[in-house]
Length: 546
Image 1 (tube, helix red, strand yellow):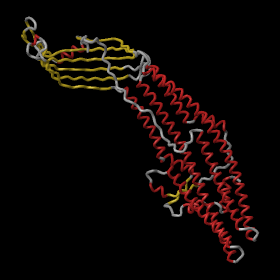
Image 2 (cartoon, rainbow, N blue to C red; image 1 turned 90 degrees about the vertical axis):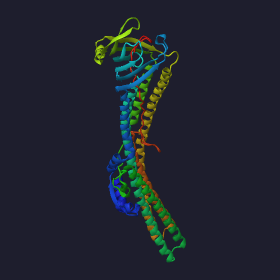
Image 3 (cartoon, rainbow, N blue to C red; image 1 turned 180 degrees about the horizontal axis):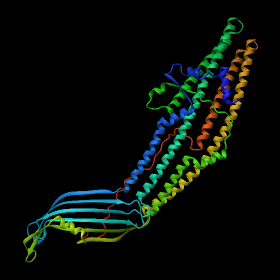
Image 4 (cartoon, one colour; image 1 turned 60 degrees about the vertical axis):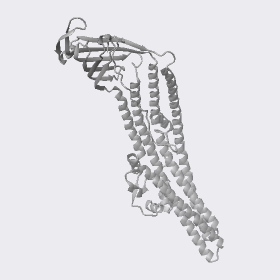
């Protein structure tokens, strides 16, 4: 007889009540409504509404935002400065006598700089203007109008050329985004497995309530028969006391079974309920899915191959290893000398009110010549006063550097990641093989438990017939009832274990099982802001460059 037919036979014998009767036994107070729930419907509700799963799904968006954060390292940076200053200089020269010099400036500077996403080079352009007034007797312009346009480029040749901190962050952030998607899929598998386990646990607990209820009814019938016989003087009063004590014990068992069923219903409801629907907690769940037949035979070799090729935790561990390799590559590059090519060009222009002097130094002002701002602009772009530079900077630490020490640490962490993957692969194989064996062993236990329940039922019927004709005692009938109850409960437990083993075998091929206290969460590496350095070119100190 198949497992499904066995359950139906129990219903026909009255040992397991139909769903509606079981619902009344579990929930004495009438619920608002009853939801007939299939296993697929429970899974669908969990995937759509489970808040812990939603947290992991939002983790994908978090990692996508981190990718966006890492991209900002290559965003052009616009900057502008506008100011006014006045500087009074004390008479530090004999030529000035006792009077100082006051210089006033109104100035502005606007520019854009960007780090390139390839080669780690940085470029910058800027435009600056200034209007300067001065009461110095040596000034040739008052006010003077100055303008300049600058373009500069800095290119690393060794360190930072192949990979720099900005590109390392971006590469790792992209890989973490992929890992978050894998973690979500893994969480879906684990959540679905948890829902299926909760579904079958609840169904088994409801059946247990029915079994306990039937056992109580048998004990009550025996107590009633003993009372009739004691009142008639056929049995001693001790038989009635023993029967009534058994009734009390089984009533307590029924109360416990009902509480367990209610807890199991809430556990299932928590996994599939929409948090925004408070009324769902008043809906009575009626699991109508039939147990699985016992004919499934797992192919362990195929399951192991699938686990090694498709397990999400192994794929995430592979991403962690790639991240470790990226860090090693970055830190290895950081050990190189910092050699940079620096280039720049600047065009300058000057205009304003120019004094015309005559005589010796400093000469007498005999007139002035007004030059508009357009003159300064023309000089900027006509190469009248160019300033350019080309050069190389080199820096290298003397002794063991921070980057060298970090590289040694990163290599060890890479080896740890490799060994972690090796350990996960061994664990995956062992878990899948154990899950497959669990299916075979629980199927055999179901067959044995079914035979035990059948024999216990036959023994109880035989003992009851002997008791009816006075050939048995209350103790023996009670013991037969207890044996039947134990056999039926054992059959329910082995059936639950079989369904759980099927769920576990399906899940462990894609994701590791959640242990007690585990939560389906995801976390990624933080992204830090990396400022852009604006190239300025190379000029000798005091040479008059910018």
